[in-house]
Image (tube, rainbow over all chains, first blue to last red; front, side):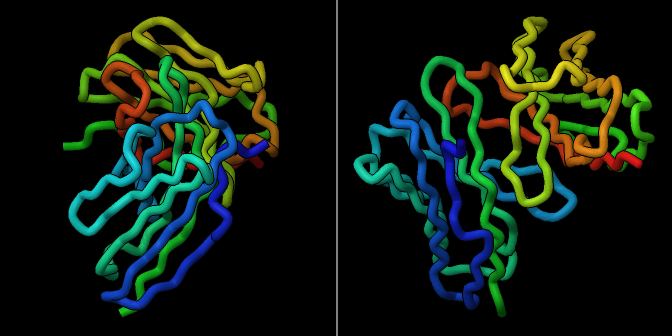
Length: 112
Length: 114
């Protein structure tokens, strides 16, 4: 029973355009959401997070939007660059030192 | 200046032959985690240590054990690897294990079971 779902296994975007990666969750207890980025032969690295008290968090080219009523979050990358090509994992947790629950990831390819 | 180091990067073992994967960290973090990631699947938490306190996930098979002899090192022991245990094993650390805290991952060890 997947609690965090990334329904698009892959996404291709042209350089300079916006990339939108989506994530849905089922556990209404989740109140922290994180995005990790993974290059081949490397471990995932933290990218950006959002807590449930916010609906948007921005860091440079990366913005995460949270829609609690829809149990949906999205990562926007604008403008997309070839170096953004990687697998992006959505993860969620809730207060009380519970472990992260990851989605299966979306492979983003940014085409020059 | 590597922060979370996993050795080896690739490990080949035989069906039923015990294998140990290692992880070390230079971050002095309290919490260390082991994840299993199969192809095209989400990383799945096997267990974690908060200092010396071991926390096993309910669905982690008994075949998987872990040791943390000190703050810097953590080992994953697979007592009798089966073909289904072939996967990428990721080690991660975090400072205090609180909700939303960043976890720092190693590059992973890819295990192949023949």
